[in-house]
Length: 347
Image (cartoon, rainbow, N blue to C red; front, side, top):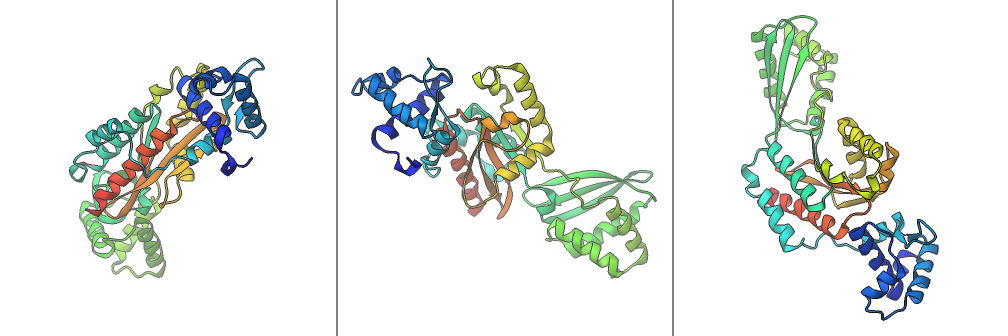
């Protein structure tokens, strides 16, 4: 029985078990499903159907005397039946719009924070937003400020109101006047370039000694050697809703939730997980059974998409939580937010 072959009683029973388990968190018995169908089918008949679904890998029976719970295969099938282009409920739409109104005038950081917050509220799970790494950003302006002996503050301004700053420690001090010449050179020659392309071109020019002034070349070489355009401008992460996980049956063991929250606090690992799961710009992604550590992530699901601002990919947004989640609600919410941002992008 392949997923596409599920129909009739088998399909109805599977969906009933999944929805009931999502709501209660408990194994679902045949009598519960029989009552939902107004006793049109006897508990014995439903038990036989559930046994067939178990043999096909859609249901599992935790204990001999217990009811059934959906497997990862069942959740994947269930999620595949949800159309992410369908609008959310009226209540969810109103909540989403209340958080994401006036997008065009909202600072990017505020927008990302609001997206993560409202996704956590909608899903009762984790709302996550990860910005694009600075290497993919387009350079609008760069400024250097000497803040002490052999210390320079670098302020990099990109599109969609993205500002990143960091401090570089130098081996040899550079006066502010020379720093101004450096920023003027970079702004005049590389405005509108992607940051990773700027880095590659500078390496090439410095190697070929094509920079006009010797002192400028020496200062650029020093700044580049100290990581001027390296990936130390880390992607920003906005994570909301960790408290939603407390008290879940799946995380009843305090050590498990501590392990999970510790992993989520390690920003580089979270960025890697989100980027690995959300690759395509063309479709909403549903990943059930996540890769990586801790092993607990194998019992988690992620629903997310790449979003765009001002004509460029701006990051990834997602809902992350245990596989027992309301897929209809979260898929439609994530799809709606993605479309809302895209519509703004086209205006």
